[in-house]
Length: 355
Image (cartoon, rainbow, N blue to C red; front, side, top):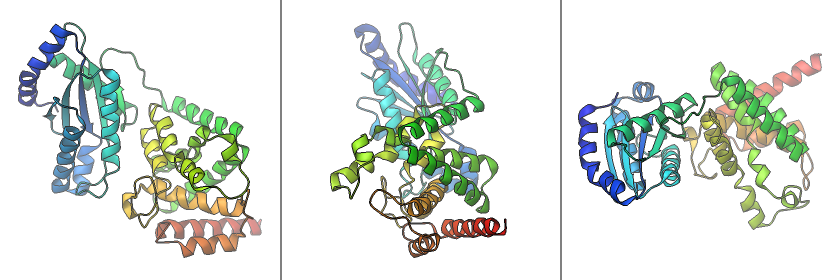
């Protein structure tokens, strides 16, 4: 809930900056960030860690907001920044950098978390109070689209797509990827089937299971940015070529963050190449710092890639692929995920033989 006294104090401090924008025509934007699911987060992690989350948000926003920005708390779990000399694109860039900083900081006391961010840019006649209120509508819009994203506030008509529309968009992306690379399309479908089963074995609820399944279907969407010559190259890759392929999760994340309602899916895709021991990429997360969906996708993706083979490697048998999973449980793979995947594979083969 907004804090009237905090908002009044911030408005008073911001008035000279707003006056400069009025008189000189320099751009000025306002950014408001609100922690996603803070009440549940506070209850699950405890008040002390909840306070650490808020301290992290405050520190990250102060670090990322360019001088001479003003930053202040405007609600229980809400911070605002007055950003002089920032147009809408620059303010959105600050918001995006804030999302990335908070989502990749699992080693901090408060752990990794997400925020919904609204930004709005000064137009003639606007007060600081109006700017904050309009940025707040951007927060509401970001949250209604799934959170973990930046939305423009104010009176701009940006409809919240229904779940059916988001599903249709995801299906279209899957089809586009299959058209670009038939192997990747069929591989993704096989991975999705395993991911759903493993998620259920691990006790994920239906909504989270479906979220992880969507991420599994789209985990290779970043390949649309990879040149065909590299994507289909026979033989071993050079170090610089491997570096290009390592960018696939980050490209995928950027594509998915642009789609309302897929912010949480984008985070799973970003981290699907992290390793359980912390030696993966792009952020070197370890253990439970890695989203559970990302851990599930990595194990399922690797099994199906091993048994399918590739342009420079023969496919492994089911038994050899399982041995590889076991050998790397605790280093590359989450041991619990590995156990659940092997159990599912055993069950499916048992049912298949019985049929």
